[in-house]
Amino acid sequence: MKTILFILSLGALQAREQLPQSVTFVDAPAFQSLVTQAVQKDWRALPIGERVARFGSALRGTSYKGFTLEIDDKIESPSVNFDGLDCWTFFETSLGLARMLEKPKSNYTPSDLLAEIETTRYWNGQCTGQYLERIHYLASWFNDNEKRGNILNVTRKVGPAAVLTGRTCEEMTVLWKKYRYLARSPSLLPEMGRIEAKESALAVPYIPTSKVKESEKNIRNGDIIGIVTAYEGGHCSHVGLAYRTEDGVCHFMHASSLYKKVVLDKSISGYLSEHKSDLGIIVGRPITPP
Image 1 (cartoon, one colour):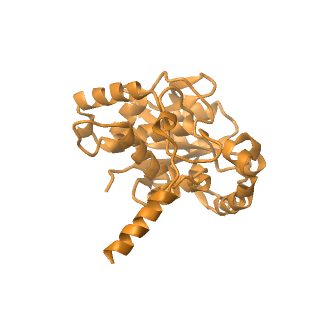
Image 2 (cartoon, helix red, strand yellow):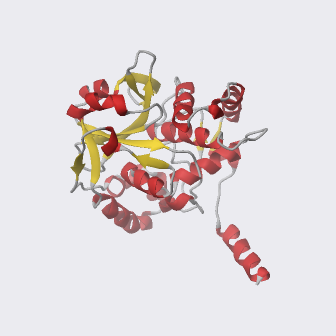
Image 3 (cartoon, one colour):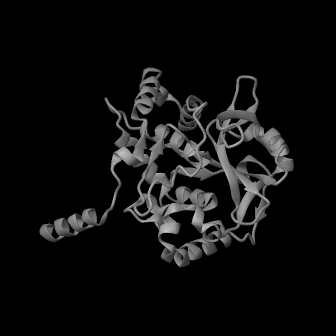
């Protein structure tokens, strides 16, 4: 029996395709510098949300780089890039670093962070090298990670919520030529369409823009803030983190294509007021890994 289990495990490992770390992890010295700072200042003693906010703030000024998840034409692998972040990789890297620090070690390595990225970025926390194992839509990311105990969707607790239904989510299949993996393998499009149909069927609670200002007092440092869009294609068009400054203002911190870097922007309500196509927000709260 043990021999059979060993053979099955070996087969599973052999089936797992992964890119080399020289491709999947960019700027290891920046990672080591940041982790050294976190260890010396004992960020591990902070609640996980505060820890996420500290790492997010430490990444301010990092250059904006679009499509940082698209690193190969065929093999999908967990990845981190400290040279350039987009909105998704900014919040996810901050969250991954905070989760990584939960486990005390004498020396943290890029592999430790990549393991945390795999846990949150992929359906059921597993990636064997297949593109469709990645969660491509934020509402689905919220649902899957809440089911697995990585976050709580606190949208309804934070403020009065409306529910978004009937959204046609088809960005990936309509704009498939913009995504390296799909452009390389159009045969993936039918299954991507089925994934999008499930996303479209979701009923997504969100706090309307008109209610966000009164709700900001209930948002915590390090909460994940998804920006709900009025446009078809997906439920959310942007994502960042909440960061409350000493004056009590709850800011939107994000990797901005406008400012070309990670910035601490206006208050969340102030940010929404300048983007008329935004309907409101969804709020995810990181929780301590089991």
